[in-house]
Length: 302
Image 1: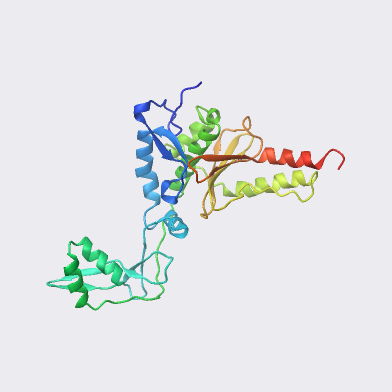
Image 2: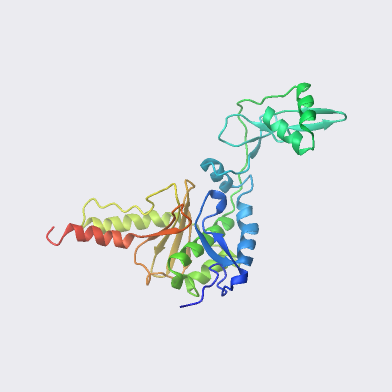
């Protein structure tokens, strides 16, 4: 049996240096893990995933939208005042709910927010109640505010590569260990490429239409749907002759993907979907098996 390696760097794993890493991001509620080296787990967690979960990142919105936590989005009102929102409530709160002016405090935002900020400032429960009793709290209510989101395609490409390596290694380790696909993904994952691959989400739709057109000649009305459960975290591998498209779906987040050199045609001729099954492991779905089953059910005389 081949000794296990870290899917993210390809180095052999030794017991004292390995740790469990979430394939699809713990911050988004994922449960499935893969064994990786501690260095990759720590480095990628701090430099990649943490960067994508800042308040002004698109992935932070995905966390907020799915109820998996997330940082409040910072923005401004038309009059220039700075506020925050968790996007699930119409009520806005101040970025600076408590400000000191000499011996006095100026507070604005909800009672809950102001009380929490006073506690962080070291006020005792009695001091908090005394301050609130003599304070006039400004409620922002329901107002329109603007905010700016940052989208760095390099970070998204790196995250896609990381998820592809973790899920691919768990599903078929031989195709993600010291292969062209694995080396390409590792270089992207660790930011060792001069040019990042273009996003390849459209590849899935093109491939879906191509397969449906081919199968429809034999099985009229056949529908190919690689993503059967959009609420789950999923990675779709689409094989081509000279490349592999790796497309991730993080819950209800928009699909994103990359196309990398190297083919997995020896592993599969049609898309493979690797999903977090919410039980701490991964489920592997082979579209090729489904097509073969549909063909068998059709029968030779139809």
